[in-house]
Image (cartoon, rainbow, N blue to C red):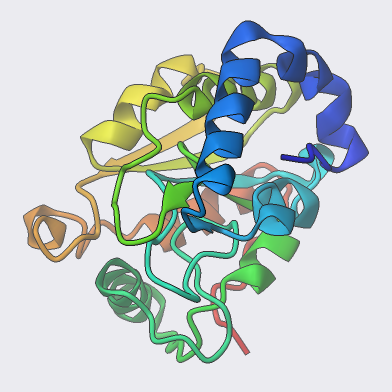
Length: 223
């Protein structure tokens, strides 16, 4: 694993790569490779979120769990899929909520344009084995991404954290609610979206908060 991150992130995270937990994680990923096990996303895209959204640009954080485990889906941005890939069910529900909230219709599941506007699309776990959901949980990534959230909390002000589901909300313990905006709702999965994700209006609430803090709102429409 090559830790090629944008310099704004790397200066804060460089020391993490020499920590025992990260060395153990790198050894685990190397074993996966030597065992000819396919992992997603492709190695150059593991840190895609950090390279699309430098630390000074972060205005919003959308926290996912782990990457999609189907071939061709994961490209290092939470909930996003590359152009030409059918949006998975959770992303379909995200688009439903945006349509209800803002009357915006999205067809492509590639959320790169959000990332380029300052939306950090961060998964708690950055890799997964093909066809084995959550297979890389508990291997060390959670420690790394907890550190990422702590860095955003400390280095930035007025960031909107969208925490969907209990897993994401538990990671939100690192966020100071007096310094940032925390929006919580059930996960957009079809199993839980009807419990309050649909109708949460997080996207308009996010933009209003950004406007109130003299920041440019996010264009949630993917052109």
